[in-house]
Amino acid sequence: MNPNLSDWDDDLPPELEEAYQDLLRALRRKSGFGLFFVQCTPGEADNFIVKLPQEMPQKKIAVLRLVEAIDNLYQPVTEFIKDKQIDILLIKGLEYSLYKYEKRNFGEITEGEFSNLTNVPHILNHLNQQRERFRDDFPVSFVFLLRSFSINYFIHRAPDFFDWRSGVFELPTAPELVEQESNRLLLEGDYEEYLQLSSEEKIGKILEIQELITETYQKVIRRSNLLFKMGNLLFAGNEYEGAITSYEQALKIQPEYHYAWNGKGNALVNLGRNAEAIASYDKALKFKPDFHLAWNNRGIALYDLGRFEEAIASYDQALKIKPDFHLAWNNRGNALDELGRPEEAITSYDQALKFKLDYHQAWYNRGIALDNLGRPEKAIASYDQALKIKPDDHQAWNNRGYALDDLGRTEEAIASYDQALKFKPDLHQAWYNRGIALDDLGRTEEAIASYDQALKFKPDYSSPFYNKACYYALQGNIEQALENLQQTINLNPDKYREMAKSDSDFDSIREDERFQALIQ
Image (tube, rainbow, N blue to C red; front, side, top):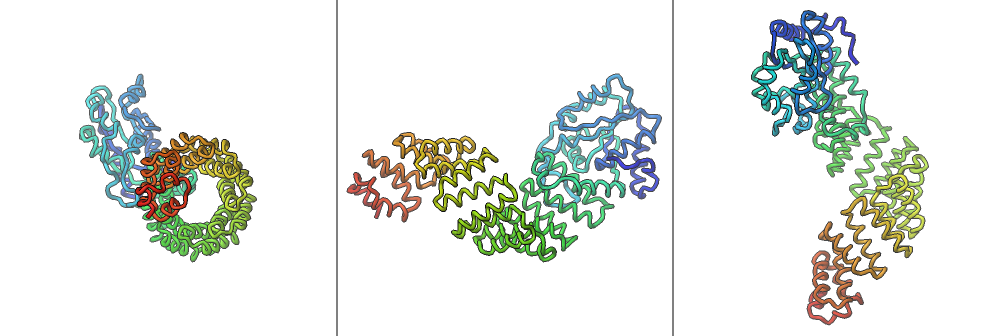
């Protein structure tokens, strides 16, 4: 939304007014072809687009707005100005064609180099090659309204085109627009929405936030809030180190910013730095003891460290504050199951499902706990609920197959494993389990093929080697039996030496010296 622009330049700061007047003078003097590069934020560009015709009524001004990446500017300009008389053509949105080339480390919040210019964007290569055609065919002053990072691309990757510039100008953002744009960014978008953005959209949003962070007229507290937002965007893009840097920058400004402490903890967990994460959550809880999200996340970090009792205590704190917090109920169930308390775990999962019936992860975890209690039929019912909500959950299909196999429903088990492999063809456990089921049906050749698939995706998986060794021993294929037994013993000597010593499948080769050497 544009601000009221009627008094846009009445009370501009001196540097903004000076830059604005310099640009106006240059445009008034120029006739015919010219290239002007104006560094400004999108909001400031919109202000300029509205104001310029009022300042220069004698000039015929048009605006070409680009809303997506392009590789060719000549063609859209040709179509746009056809049958029009234009003196000045304002072009906004060229940065969309540059986002996918923007590979810099966003963790460094500086006003220095914005870009790691390793490739030449197609659009800039096009401009370099077509500059004479632009000059000869368009007697127009082109004004490129560009974000700060885009200027670097023109300097370094479109030098031929940029060399013909009539001027480069920087329009600082007016204080009221800094406030308006900052508030818009702070109000729009949460983490879930950020996850849905494409990589180019994330980059565009990050650059927009970064420009506002470094604005001269940015308020200190808003800068901290924007840094937190940028941390969330980086987190959504799996840029955890960069996210931590952003959160830490926010905390330098607001040391009691509990959301930033929590965000930093989440990024640390994703880097496997759980002890540091707990310290970060403790900071968040120091400043906001009733912050249920931090209690839950602290529990996750403790769980990852194997400190299950402490994790449960943390989840309990979260639930004391927010009794309907389904995530904490589910996580609490996981910790209880790890402690060998599956009945209590199921009660916890049931609480999660009481508050969110379509929570597929709780149905899945509930199935595991029921399996652990030796209740395969109920486990299958739980997996079925999970799959009703998330039909492509490969682990639920695999576990469902395992439970069916326990019930002797082997054909159904194989069908379930096949579903798991449909959604995740490299799921080695499903290939292995499928092999066992086929073996149980006497379809040994198919079983071997399944074991081979498991080993293709996990070459250090000892169990398929052992099962193959048993099969070949029963077939009297001594060489293959010994070869596979050697492989499995190499991977897990103690376990498989002991198993082979008493396994009747090896009776036919037990007296072979090579077999005896392997099991000693």
